[in-house]
Image (cartoon, rainbow, N blue to C red):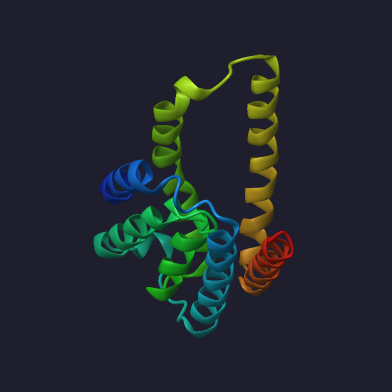
Length: 178
């Protein structure tokens, strides 16, 4: 699985890097973010509801892991969650919820580390920075543990609904402020 993760990271990282340079300022409008949240929420719901759940983590193929890795390049669009798009792609490929969540979290490590190193020059390294990193790490561990337990018996429906509601809220705020 290590080599699958390495190979799956390359296209997502390369595409994300290239598109971030060209489109970073053009996609940050509230309407784009709201639409992306809503569309991805609806897609997540439909795919999760209709997907077969027969493939375990250990049985994932190179093609599946590569396609999941490629899909994370869509996360350069604000409102498209990296983990959400990778889990949606994995579910569309017939991978069990818990298995695709595990792979998605592992897949995030090299891409997040690379993005962090790339943007490191923009960070303000200070005590509050370290407190934030440590707090995020601790909270992240608990949230991932909770999510993995939840996905053993639950669906992505609640996350899909949340995305649609937040997307509508963002668009409504944008319209009110016009």
